[in-house]
Length: 391
Length: 217
Image (cartoon, rainbow over all chains, first blue to last red; front, side):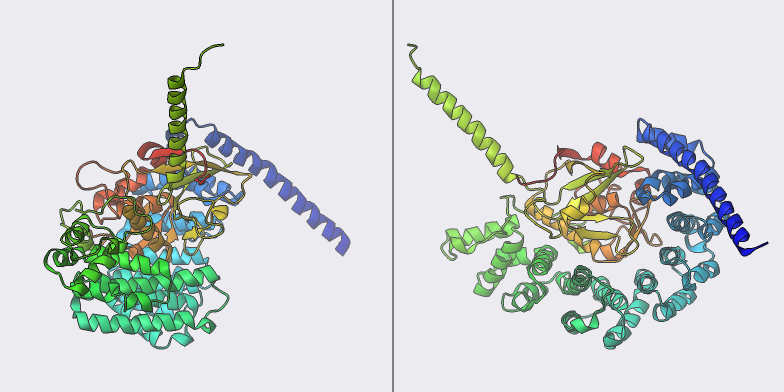
């Protein structure tokens, strides 16, 4: 058979397969869309799906997602699968999630369901194969990380190694995030290593390291003395600002906006570590007009955010100060606090000073968008006096 | 010629003036910061709504700056602060469904707290999830708050629910003094997210402020 003839046959076969596939697939997609769009309520959509077999639901998800609709359109199918999680076999969930014929969104959804169903009893060796496979879809790999058992030190070590060794930046980020959630001490060690040598790490790995370090300072600051934490926080903030200002560090991988978001937030998390200590000293450190506020190079938005959190977290110490002190420095501190959050009791205490002539009324300044409603101490559902205590 | 009743005219003018001033003050006072905005595409399902939270006071004065914080199924940093035009991109197929607020009044301070929390979510790399509003590590349900950096997966309505409830503004969930706050590690709150959709969140658990876009004009 000549080359020309062979080519014609191939073209004919491709055309026939294409036309046949389209002819069958389009009515199927149309039928799904019609059924879903003609439903009178979400309940009807869920009821229709509940009558279908798991295989049919998975097939429909593939059809919708492969047709290019937004992932959210498959939400009802995914939720129906979640509702019958007890009846889904772990083998099916895992095998379908690695089946490359399935749409990536379906694959990661099944992987999430597998993790949810199995808890800390997932098959870690199979998941690690997915995570460490550089040819695998990134989204699937990242979701596989969160399906891993969170309480196994050996797995944590493998993921710690993966943070440094994998090529995929997203997989590296989520490896460290998995660790700061499951073993924050180990995550901090990795973060310290990266920050000490930050010029040699990629943007995404640096973002993860900064967040891991900030998280540990924020979450587990109880093991450190105030002075030790303050020094550590200062060192950390200095590194963050150094990296932030050293634009040469950044590649084009992150947009300008992502860069800004990526760096400013870990810095404010680290500042929050101090803010959350719940002491007059930490409030003074952040709110002192000659200190943090004037030195902060990251803009008004972050300053406002950190100061709000400081006032909120240190409310009890500030209120005590408002009731007991007439010292000029203390009043200055309370006036600064009121500029960020006008707590009723602190404002009342300041106004009492205005009435007795020890304070000029125009020195009390409220936030620009203040609507006249003073802030109150909040009580959380668990009965803790100030919910900030739990943060 | 009919005699003009000066008193009636004065009263009428005053009433009209009051109506005018009242309507003006309502518009002038409209501040959509920390309110939720919902939109949908011309796609398969009428109920497939998408949720975002207003970072700015309205959608018109902020130009191209970040106006709305929302979660999409994009693969990295699924929670993101975007401009209004980006949120409403592809206007030919996207329909605005309304501005909604929680059923309780929020002070300006509370609104700042809510936006701060949504911004916190945007600062950490979180995965998208279709099956529930929110996912976090459940190995230790010690009733502590789930920090934004501890959120592993989230959906668009999860950003709304978490940002409000992290600041004690209840949207929905089991009644009573506990068990409704999705930001607290708790078996009940972890489970209840399964049955909710963005459409239900808006129409059943929040108050419609207006159907039009959150414009200052």
